[in-house]
Image (spheres, rainbow, N blue to C red):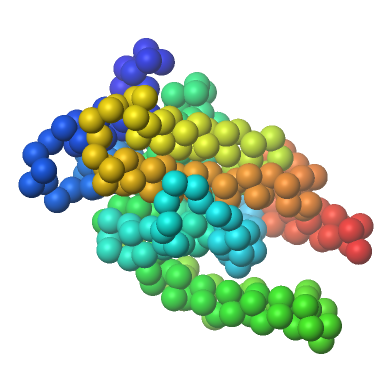
Length: 293
């Protein structure tokens, strides 16, 4: 990779999209396909050095809350409800929110990038782990359906005044063990391993991770503007915007975590190398929850 900031990864992605827009109309590839099939992401994967796992336990987080928040947004410039990933599954904005970071990501935290370019490299690779052609997102979403159903049931009962949300919602279930077993058979980092280095989900580090991903998404979306390229077809403009939205949805997970009460005060970075990180994290999160009651 060039050390020149003007030649960063985001610019290379944009160049791929621009090249595609000028290619033969017989090409069946979408802009997202061009990004995912490029050698760029392979080089990113080989250049990212996983950070050592901390000693001790791990922290689990829930999917359904992220999904609910993401599926509540209205997207401008497109009428799509779900996005088609390269492995031919359809995934909603909220599902991307829920899977990002916790289930798909990089063992080299985005916030630990030494330069803006490095942080963008890490984000794009994290996003790619969800959207590459070998992604197992369909299987994972099936396993998470029980949790989502529990969340929706608890929400409905609370609205009807028939129960306490925290007593009705049961986020943990058999999917947890199934998920761990499934992912250990694949090359993508496991749910538990990602949780062990999840600095991107706490405090200022979450802000850094979100800002990085949002910036990448904005740069990509800007290339679809008529001011940037007057000859792009409406289809190509739409495809570029959709790809940018998937990147922004991935980034939004960290924005949501940035303002989650327990994530605000837990000193995650300081706990990284402690002997019992799980117990300390849970104690901090539980204390915050009690203070809010």
